[in-house]
Amino acid sequence: MASCTGIECFIIALREAGFTLVLLWLLTLAIVYGMLSHAKLPKSDTMKGLISISSAFLVLLAAAASPAVAFLQNLIVSSIMIAFGLMVLMIFLEITGTKHEGAHIFAKYPKWFGAGIVVIMILIFIGAGGLGIINIPNIGFDESMTAVLLFVGVMLVSVWVIIKEGSKPKK
Amino acid sequence: MVNLMAITDTLATLTDLGFEHVLLWLFTFAIINGLLAQGKILDNARETRAIIGIVAGLFVVLSTPVEMIAVISNMSAGMILVIMAFLAIMVFFEAAQVKHVQHYPETDASGRQTGKIKSVESPFFTHHTYIMAAVIIIIAVLLFFGSGGGTLLGFEGTEITNDNISSVGLIIVVIVAVIWLIKEENPNAKKQ
Image (cartoon, rainbow over all chains, first blue to last red; front, top):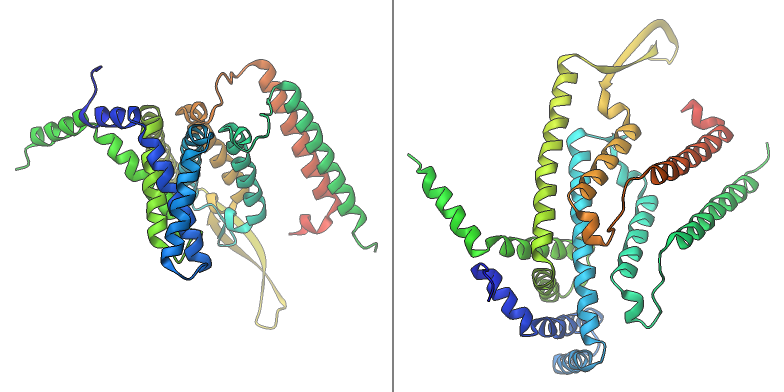
C-alpha cells in the first residue's frame, strides 16, 4: 500500500471494503425511524423498527445504491463548505458590528437571504447529480443556458417591478 | 517550565497519525447536528439526529478528506487574517476619531425646537451598514473561492478574463440602475 498515515490507511481500507454502503443503510434506517417516531406512526416500536430496517435494506439493494452514495457524499461536502462559508461571513459581520437598527442584516431581510439559501441548495443538488438520481436528465449549465437563465431573471424582475408599480394606489 | 519540544513532538505525532481526519469528522458532525437542532428537525428523535451527524461525518471523511481539510485550513487561516485586519482598521478609526456625526435640531420637553443643534456621534462601521455588509460579503466570497472552496463545489476552470469582468460589470450596472430607479419612484425612501 502507498505511504499513508495510520488513520488514512484505516479510511482507505474502509472505503475499499464498501463501508459507504453500510453508512447508506444506517442513514436510511435513522431517517425512516426518526420520521416515524416524529409522526408517532405506528405506535408500536417493533413495527417502526421493522419498517425502517426493511426500507434500509430496500434502498441498499436498489440499483441506484452506489450512485446515491456518491450523490450524498457530494451533497454533504458541498453543504458543509457552504455552511462554513456562511459561518465565516457571520463572524465577520459580528466582528465589525454591522447591524441595522440593532438587528443583523440576515434578520432584517430574512426572505431575501432565505431565497438566496434556497437557490444555493438547488444549485448544490443539481451539481451533486441529484437530477440523475430522480431520473431527470442532467441539465448542462453551459453559456447558452446561463444566458437564458439571466434573460428569464431580468424578465421576472421587470414584470415584478411593473406589477408592483400597478398595484400602488393612485394619489 | 513547559517543554515546547514536547508539544511540537506531540503535534507531529498527531499529524503523522492523521489526526486532521478525526477533526474533519468532528467538524462535520458538529455542523450537521447543530443545523438539525437549530432547525428543530426531528425534535422528538435526538438519537436519529446524532446518527445522521455521525453518518454525514463518515461520508465526508470517506469522500474527499485531503482536499476539504486543505480548504478548511486555508479558510480558517484567511479568516483570522481578515479579522486581524478588521480589528487593526477599527483601532485606527478609533485612534483617529473617525465617527459619523449627525446634527439634529434640539427640542424641549413639549417638542418645540429650541434653536440649538444637537450632534449625535455613532461608530463609522455601524452607521454605514449596507456598504459594510456589501464589502464584508465580497471579502467572504473572495476568501471562499481563494481557499479553493469553489473547486470543491465544482466551479472548476472559472478564470477571471476581460470578458468575465465586463459581463459581471454590466450585470452590476444593470442591478444598480434598477435599484436606483425603484428608489427614485419611492420618495419616502429618500426622506428616511
